[in-house]
Image (cartoon, rainbow over all chains, first blue to last red; front, side, top):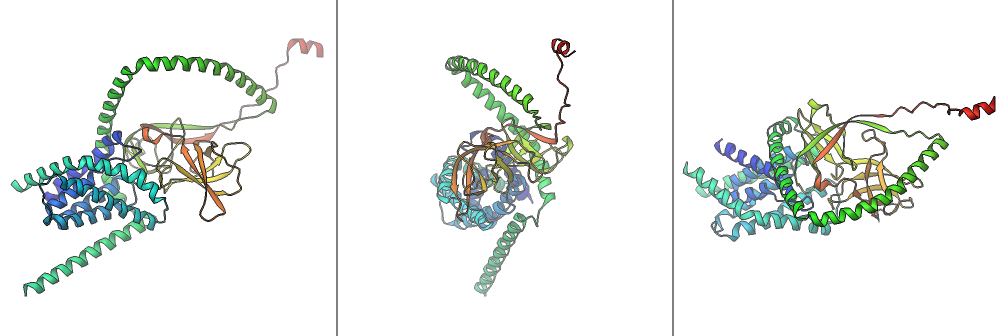
Length: 163
Length: 301
């Protein structure tokens, strides 16, 4: 319960920041995906069970609040939370490059899961052009924000364990 | 014994994961076809998040205005020079347009032409948030049912069509932009010789360009053509600017082609919009008899 309340508030705050403030820095409508970065960092620290749960919560919040295809972000972020959680025991959590490298892999994975769902829903697009226009700027933004977000997540996890 | 239990546990876990993924998968496809929705969940999310997004967006906009104001002060001399030369050009254009306006007036009187101008009742709104979700384009505005906004109402700016209200809540609404792949707008080419009809929909491959589809291969449409709403379909009133044709490409089937449009509205800088809460055709002005000049009247007598 405490987990849901605290992380629900963190996710809501991140979503508000991502949609109301950070669009000022967007490049052709593409910006940083704070929710994805939070899910990745949290999963690396806390494992697949809680990672999958936080991914589910983050994706559901995004789907309900943004008006996009219902369930797409829920599925992609839940999968990412679970997959990165599986790696949590095999990585050195205190390394600087970990959040950056993970953010890049997660962004690509999230992109392709969503692209697959969009194609299955019957929409067609030019993948190469889309990769260039959407994925590249998104990788850039997420890479820059990955480390500060990871530090923030580490701090919250430590605080929660202290209590 | 413990190995058996561990295997049972991991087997159970895998089944739970498969069940959850399958359920979410079903929700995605039923929701996309309109057979499943969670209005309560969306309403709760909007009720809690939208007011906070509104506050944060206002703070962000203030910071943006302050920084852009500072930049304008720095570049004011160069701007002044540019504006001076622009004023000269506009003066020359003004002379020309006055001439054209009077010619237009004369021709209208000659043809007895009455413009069926559509009049709108507008409610202005500020854009509160925009999710940079990769595949869809929805914005949240700070006007809702309490301000007379309803589902399916048309949203515009002075430049042209923005989209339609996808969902209206008490004080906020979700607006689906014309760039969203789920959107479909009935349109025609504005050029008098062409008037080719088509449907403008979002282009998932390129967020900057919309697509006008269902155009026959031999249709008269060219780069630079202005595209406006056709009024077909009932949602969008006729004559709202949608965009300009940037290039034309052949459809995969071979019988049709599609045009890529640069939208009339700059969606990257959209801060304020207007919701058309009521639209009606203007009443034609009454036909009055031309005034008879006294000299001509005398001659007739």
